[in-house]
Amino acid sequence: MAKRADSVVGIDLGKHVLKGVALRRKGDSRFILTSFASRPVPEEFASAEDLSRELKQLLRDLGGSAKACAFAVSDPSTILRIIEQPDTPVDLLRNALRLNGLAVLNQECKDFVLDVAPVGSHADDESTTEKPSAAGSKTAVQSGVVTQTKYLVGGMLRSQVKQIVAAANKIRLSAEILQLAPVCSFNAFEFAYPEVFANDAFLLLDMGHLQSTVLIGSKGELVLVRSIDYGGKALMQALTAEDALDADAAWLMIQQGDEGMTDICRGSLARLAMEVRNSIGFFEGQREEGISRIFVSGGLARAETVLQALSDELSLPCEIWDPLETCEVALPAAKRQTLPNEFVSLNVACGAAFEYFKT
Image (cartoon, rainbow, N blue to C red; front, side, top):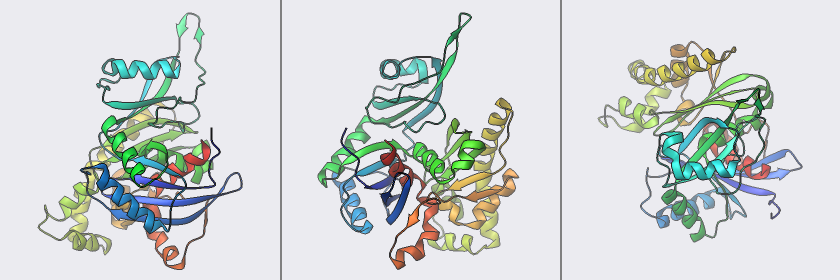
């Protein structure tokens, strides 16, 4: 395996905004943020050429060419499940899912690129590349009873993988890693808040454009992952009354705490809060531990009104978290000033970059 470069660009291929971070390694476990950037994009790209054009501009905004790049994909079409199976070699299980996904996942998987990893202390080896996953499981047969092992299964449409690889090749970008966004977010949290990650139960709520993702972990293990069909697009449609009001004006009113807009915001977010509450109830019903606070990320989390509405609905503190908490920052003055408003959306891009250095 080729030696990893000492710098990498992590790119979050979102459904509304592309986000990128440039990180440089300093020593074994210290990293420096040297740049970040974001670009609004359409929900779908018609061709690899269109995607490559946006990627090229994002790299330009980041301030230069990248030696290596780690991609993360946010898309409702992806698969991310935790399953329980008898202890099975990862390669064998991956092939079984490809051939008979309907029986294991209740979903046909022939059009997907799949990967599988055992859920141990954490699932940071999960990616949608077809490389072998980390092996190692502690299941055993005791008294004639086969114990079950938890596996994290991830998948992306093969057509989407081909488009991303082709787009990267067009601009001579080395796509070293291709990973699912929720896994990147989980990995970024581990790096940013190692004590919480290793010792507590925690819930990460990432509010994207088309959907939101709930990740619940406990003492380093991913316990629950769930996608909710609600995101920034749904909230904005409620705030603008289906485009009767300008979106930028509506968002400004939310940030300024307009009373009427706040009521609409709370009513819309109640749907998301109910699903999050159900996830917490399921987790706490299965385990003798509870969730005491919620870590929120995504563009919607920039508005205090959104955080307060979720906190009130869930009766739990909802707070933004910083994926760069343990990183050094070496940014030009202008970018340094905007970072406090942007880091809440950089968790996925940071997680992809961290994974590059760990692999």
